[in-house]
Image 1 (cartoon, rainbow, N blue to C red):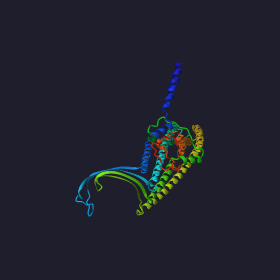
Image 2: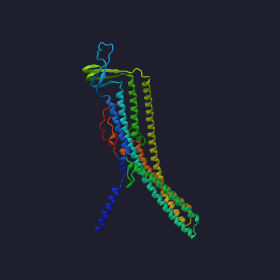
Image 3: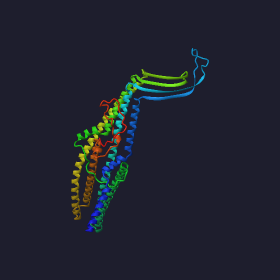
Image 4: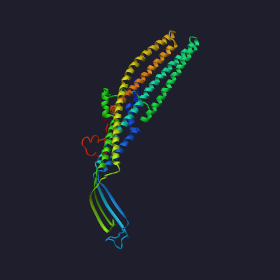
Length: 461
């Protein structure tokens, strides 16, 4: 009874230890998006773009300046009733004043410039999500590649072991005079070929491990095969619809297009006058050509209108119109590329499913063929070459099946990434910088975008 309890306790501890050492795909992705510097780079860019928006909004607010100066001044007057014998003498002048200026109208240049930066903030927030998804997909690829290549190497080790055992058997036949030296050389060549194939797989595994370290920043220990990805679109059209609404690359490009349009509208303001209200209060002594103490107060409405600038304003507006067209074409190109990626991912998944079914049947059939050929070879009813070829076919089918299964799992996650739903499907949160409370404000009738001081954490989109 005591021994049984001890065995149960040891089994429980072993199971607990194995569970603690596991590192699931979801854990790898969360670690990648949390620690990868590429994500930090995009979030810093978002915060910097926020500050550019605040700079643009500052031009809509009153500008307050304090001016002061002190130093000798001299005024020499000629042929003036005010001229005196002391004209031209230096006097210790000083002055201090406060100037307040409020922009009233500038052809809506500043308002449109503010909207341009608001759209740039929106694009920057989508690019945070875009970067997180790319890092997550890198982690998924490295994770599944390591497992896939490890299984392929295990199959390669089995293949080498089979050929080495066959080499020993053939060598015994050669020693006994039942086979020629050529048979032994032929098997030895197959052993070397199998070892070369394993070396190539080991090289590819090393590359996958390096990619995993870069993406996840830890050693690939405790990895385990994930199931098929959750939340897959039910159809190709559903995947396309999801991409239009959720694909971060497309949404960022759309915001860039709106920013280019706002910049073009801002440039049109140079065709209209700039009107500002300026108030001034100053006090001084022996300054501004005034002898003695004085106080100065003024409130003025000023206007400035550039009627001709050598054609530079028109050229600037034409340039920005072409830049807008360029950005619109870039958005159209990205949409086509998104559709292409959806089509490829959908086709790849379907093709891999068919390939897995075919290879599963081929592996079973190849195992039976190898078993039959081995028995017939021992009875001298089948040649060594037939047996070697059967073993090679079995190995190729087994490795192909492992490869197809691994690629099929990754293809699921590629489809989710192309449709913009990878993070939500894996329940991975986004940084706070991926949220943007100003989205769609202009379409809803807002005149000026409000400041976004504290973007909230948003788990998915």
